[in-house]
Amino acid sequence: MKKILISGGLGYIGSHTVVELIDRNYDVTIIDDLSNSEEKVLDGIESICGQRPEWIDLDLSDKSKSDDYLKNQNFDGIIHFAAFKAVGESVENPLKYYRNNLFSLLNVMSYLETHKNCAFIFSSSCTVYGEAIKLPIKENEIIKPAESPYGNTKQICEEIIRESSVAYNLKSIALRYFNPIGAHPSGKIGELPIGVPQNLVPFITQSAAGIRGELNVYGNDYPTADGSAIRDYIHVVDLAEAHLVALERLLTDKNESNAEVYNIGTGTGSSVLDVIKAFEKATGESLQYKIAGRRKGDIISAYADTNLAEQKLGWKSKKTLEDALKDAWRWQKNLM
Image (tube, rainbow, N blue to C red):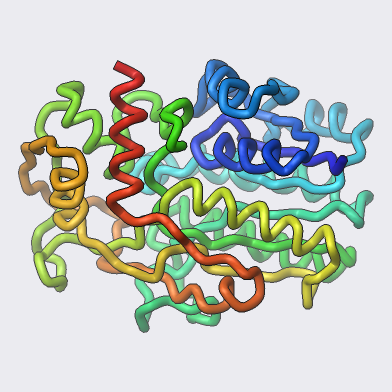
């Protein structure tokens, strides 16, 4: 049984990936300091999988504590999710993002430097592209200056991984995924934002549940069909499966270079107003919304070209936008 470390494994995407790995009989250990998650997520994972993974309460940005733990471990693979991820917050508090996102990666890379056979999957983001020149976005899109400190941390982290993988003969894959939404179909795990949600769909579900009141649509003057920003919304379970197939590519030595990069999305762009209408159609719930000003750091449009992931990983998204919104609403209702 392969032993896999999931950093940030109690977070939104991490917890769904943990479920996929346990279902494939991997031995999973989670590191999570609960800075953006809750311990009760373990109950949901256990309820779905029938077993409770090991959880280590550790801040990976703390070098001394990270080294003390990792030096005695022997993992076959690491999937690194541990990072702060809100674009708007990163604009307001950039040092918080640089300290956490860069230091946590560097401490994991120090372990990989001495464990060269350990497969490494990095949770990257389409924000590395900034405002893309051509759509859909391909992996060879020119990387321009990031639109936010969060996006910049992902750019820097990818550079660190690429240079380290070549220098130390490591095997790594960075998955540049687009906008994850939805929840596990069981309704037992899902997105659990602490405080006011920074992402669209949890704000929609909390608004529909009467928790947040009126929904803000940030900008109706973008150069798009309906004036609202466009994103590629991917079901979190599809995204979790992408991490699994990427990990297995490295564990079976099928990678063609030390550092590979793949877009993970649906290949379809949906506007904010499209998502609101789709939620109402999928759930039968009505939403109240108002137009607000644009947020700093937001781009106009981003959706993926997924051909490379389909060809090399054999992965393609299966679930629809409506599937994701129904699952997100089921999860929200279970929290009420």
